[in-house]
Image (cartoon, rainbow, N blue to C red; front, side, top):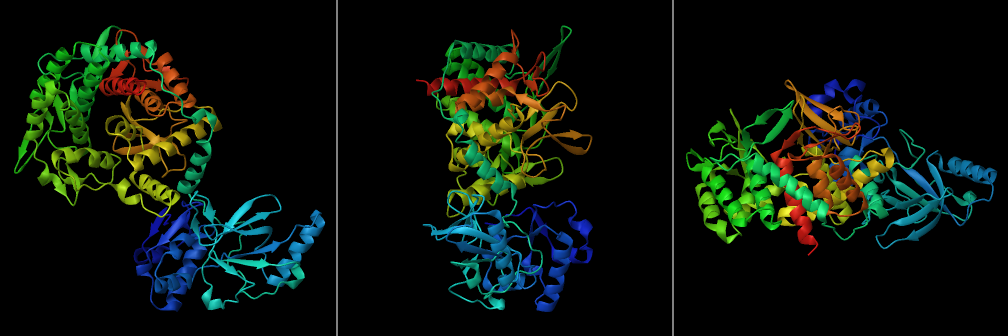
Length: 606
């Protein structure tokens, strides 16, 4: 377990180590030191460490980090750390009065030479080797090897049984050491162990870590009856929603290519349309049309003819040994609007074409299109690269990379890397989940897609299932705390800045944020207070299709009540402030995904 919220390169930073360097980290920040940069000379290492300790103040180095380091590096780190150890005194029972309890606590502090003392009772040894103790207020603590227990609860330690061993000062330098004394009376305690020094926190020293906090919150919230799984329902109202979403695909169709306008808006009877389309939206169009076949919204042969026309119209860029679809094309004639290659959008298109290939009528057209693509030259170290205007960029550190690893084997690329898969490691589910959340934090805002699209199109991987649980629990927790119903996703909107990214965000002070561009600046705002906070229509339908329960049904009801634009399509979304509709504003991706979600839902009810 390595909770990393800030990295410090000592070689470049030690000369700048002032309080200002750490002023924005906050009380709960965990600081990871690049131990390879520490001076070998213990005296010099101690000096550097003291400067860190003085600057960080209440922030501290992680005990989890130190517990997994090789012994020599461990000793180099621990040599300079302020000691945050504390003593637990296990009593058979607590004194009956507050006066008696406080008197006993004062005696223990005097005999042990430290204020970092907690009186507890219990001392039961659990299966994982930890001691379970309870304070006078009923709060439980587990003491043992530091880290997370199998259920995600923190274990404080490492533990030293003071009644069994009298370690020397040089042996006990872990900053979170726990000394346990078993005593019938405090008068029998002896100060066998080194006293705590440095900053003495008069409360348990568990790390305030947002990923760990989120894990525990989600686990508790998922027990809520509002998130209990329910049998999915597909009724006449949902069929009407499907018909409305399909009407967008029909009305926006371009006869020459079969493609569709990606955004449509009407103001005072005038239409304002976007005729540029990404490969992501092409994928959403094909998948929406396949869902329409499943939902029997139009004759299958007519839809198949349109899909074949779309596939035949897609241009391919020949670039040396590589061949790939461009970043952006025009829907009217499929001309290239922007050269380049987007790995995430390509994965979405590939998912659509491989699903189309499962239909006999589309098998040949799908095979011919995929046969034109040659992406081996774009792969580097198991990662599919993006091609931008002036450079090549890895797509690894993105929320799309895992989705890509589920799709690209269809093109013969089976050795692909996923940041989710590589982070999802540890002895317990709790360890694996928190490590995965650290990676999500590193990547940035996590939206509903492609997370739930993996569910609908490919079935959930272990990583996808865990993130879905945490995401759903966090949305419900937010609702319980604020009364605000969220359905976050990336969404086009009907006003500047025209497109926003929103979702789950561990890397900022608030958990739910909206991000958008303002000129060259990237702005982050709390979704709850931003004027661009959006309740995404497609997210609401996806969540109910994947995890039907009372809460996701509430999300679906909100979309059904406010997002329908009769005769036009499903609105892109609702402004969170009052849940007002983006009037006469609809987009291809939303309507295609709504169709996908409804087809998935109907499939589940059979």
